[in-house]
Amino acid sequence: MFDSLSDRLSGVFDRLRGRGALSEEDVRAAMREVRIALLEADVALPVVRRFVDAVTEQAIGQQVLRSVTPGQQVVKIVNDALIEMLGGGTAELDLAATPPVVIMMVGLQGSGKTTSTAKIAKLLKDRHGKKVLMASLDVNRPAAQDQLAVLGVQAGVATLPIVPGQQPVAIATRAVNAAKLQAVDVLLLDTAGRLHVDQALMDEMKAVSAVSAPRETLLVVDALTGQDAVNVAQNFAGQVSLTGVVLTRMDGDARGGAALSMRAVTGQPIKFAATGEKLDAIEAFDPQRVAGRILGMGDIVSIVEKAAAAVQADEAERLAQRMAKGEFDMTDLRTQLQQMQRMGGLGALAGMMPGMKKAKQAMANSGMDDRVLLHMDAIIGSMTPKERAKPELLNAKRKIRVAKGSGTQVQDVNKVIKMHQEMARAMKQIRKMGGLKGLAAMFGKGGLGGAMPGLDQQMGGMGGMGGGGPKLPGLGGMGGGMPGNLGDLLKRK
Image (cartoon, rainbow, N blue to C red):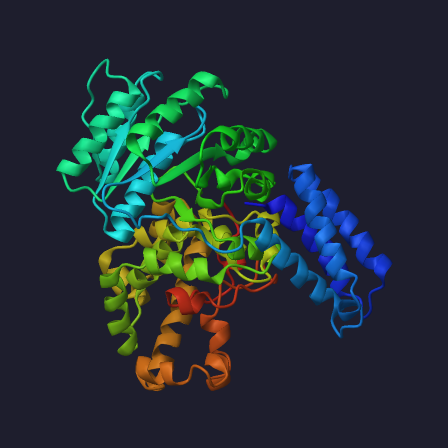
């Protein structure tokens, strides 16, 4: 997400930070590069002009140029301007109305409207405890109503029964009545799309809106279409009272032009960003976090949220009890690896950590990817329950069997064993320090490293990328730690 734009801007600001003093010409030259970077990212020209003019005006002020760290000041100004361009604060759904609260989903065919409807419904059910009903008003696209019904089963959300031949306005009326009778909190209407914006589409949207009185009208647009998405949004905003935007396929959008232009073009905030095909691959759009990712400042809050969602309560409790006793076997290590996979893998975590853009690139350059975690999981999975509980049983003959069973080599098995040994030693050290309570008491006093030299290196992070590259500090705090040099653990795919 935003990778190409982030890389370009990082290069510009690295040069600014490297200078002790900045002149007005230095700033203007940097802003010209920022302008080119935004245009190449497919950001709408009027938006680019307003953004660059606003940033330049502030950045050439005497307070910045005479600052002790002028480069950092410029980055802060750009960060604030990006947040403003993206909408300022997080815009949540307005559900403060008498139930059922109606949310109408609009957009063109192929934008991901039906899937986004199911994703939002699942999110409202799972995270907000709402009783949700979905209804498909798309009578034009073959099997559109059946698709929503299938997604409803997968999401655990009720869908309005299909009545063949019924038209959109009649379906909307029936859905509202059914929602009232069933004491539904939120009703999601998945409206029909077209291949392009036309008057028939707009008339249908207005007619459905008139009978359902939606509290929210969300426009779903495909981020990968770039400037076309912006044009579609502009057309819809001119005829339908939008309250927000849902951007789909954000995970595949390396440029980010649609996201950066959408607020300025529609006048409405981006409320959700879909980041994958699974029904839980959607997140509230937070301008501050997105700006941080674009400028390489990371997104620790998202890491914490992903950790909270990925870590199973019973797993965490079991591991905490074992840590308190200084115990840590191969099954515990496997649990840690699986948690990392559920959190998005190595690349996703590196992309969210402050200053880790170069580490993420190093991973790509060295051929490392999330298959590393899969290989490690396969190695542990090829061990017997006894071997996982007591890794010291793994003699040469057993290692050969494990390597063959996991499709890896004996040296790979040895690296996983070494990784486990380092983590087991760390667990024993924690026990000597007084267990988890003693460990917690040391936070705020120089961290683990200040309390016990060397432990940061063991527990903090994923190690050097590709053998001697940058570190990924802090992952130990999220999932119990992944010590050792991951580049050396499993370089081969």
